[in-house]
Image 1 (cartoon, rainbow, N blue to C red):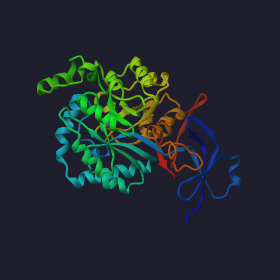
Image 2: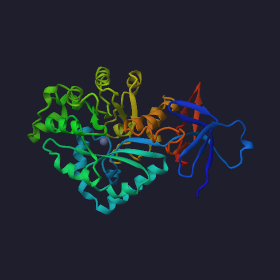
Image 3: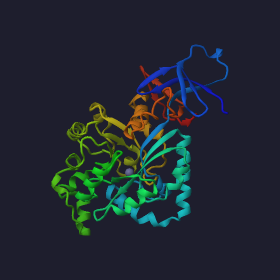
Length: 380
Ligand SMILES: [Zn+2]
């Protein structure tokens, strides 16, 4: 029998609020028993005290853990089409054992750094065993990719994961019928790489590097009549579906409003700033999304386009945004996107969300911000 723990800190940052002097009582199995505020620490025996802020376990809203072996294998700055080609070229250069070791190490590091759940895109079944053993909750989605692809091979992989959903890679890499079928049959959220580059919208006008590449290869698209990636999503995915739109670097304010209006619950706008910087030096339009009241979530993407899967380092890319807001993106918003709000994403009585320490926060004006050299560490 483990003991009940009392965890105190300078701040609790939870669901967009900062609560000073929290003391959280946690059961041996990680269930939150109570959240209160302390007055004087010297009167509390058996209490663990931490400087900095505590928050709920984080939700990495976009990754491809199976690609962890590609860390450092693809140079940064190749641009968008160059990156897609490079992945295809280096994929075969690694043994099954190297791949396995890399994904196990990535999983353990994410756990230690406080990740509770991952929205993970898969193209094969190599992560099945690792995920069964992991303490992290993985929501695996089998990605259908390629203009000539059919869905049967992906359905086979989905069965190996115990009936995972299929999802569509993007609005530029899947033909109309397959895209619509997946959108119709998907039970959880659909996750789509969206407006990562200007080339996606340009393709619909017959311009840009994607259009040129497809032309050279002799590939035809049967979906360009929708006019734009945003219009294609609106025309193909029913309003009651949940959707995660990943990257969003080149989405316009008008498109954000149209997509917000179309989907009953609004899309989840997943930002992966370090991956964008790695591939194309683009930045997601975070101020515009904040103005629109959008549900922002945070993902790391894969180690093919990032130096680590650290959520806190992702949050440091938004150094002008208060900690209470970026941590909301990284916790409860991600849990909501995955339909896990009842279990994860906030420090509330009865939940088992994990408790994470952000060891350094700095005060500027009335707000707290995550310090540049802060680290995140799992306490529970
Ligand atoms: Zn991705």
